[in-house]
Length: 172
Image (cartoon, rainbow, N blue to C red; front, side, top):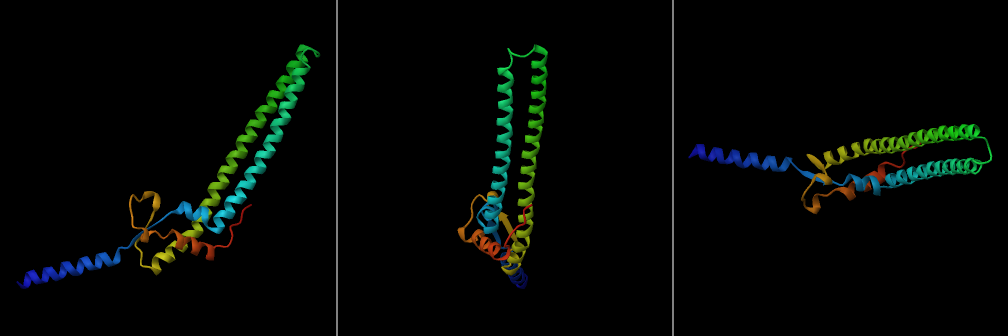
């Protein structure tokens, strides 16, 4: 009887400690990145960079199209070898434009990744502090949660903390 009582006390104590120490919550990081003040500012600045890049590329593309029309309009007027030289020169310019366009778009994509990564690095200590203060063992990304109680979603609280603690993110 003493043995059974000892095992019962041990099991009850063990399960109470396990339940008390393992608090799991989830967060929608996409929402934090997109709806926090610093995240919104980041999105706006990146869109401005993208618009400027697109505008510059569009101007260059229009210029190449004008050159092409000009060359084609002179097709019957100039000598064949001169025409072919101009076409070859235009092709080289088009190839340079394509390389430049690809490089600019790759750079823009890399900037987006770098700035998002930098923002996540600044959010990480906030999450760590929040977890320590609220005795949270695990914070899961909402994408990976199939079903969970809404009271376990800490997204809004973290957005508020991010808004309070991170005022800006330097963009070059």
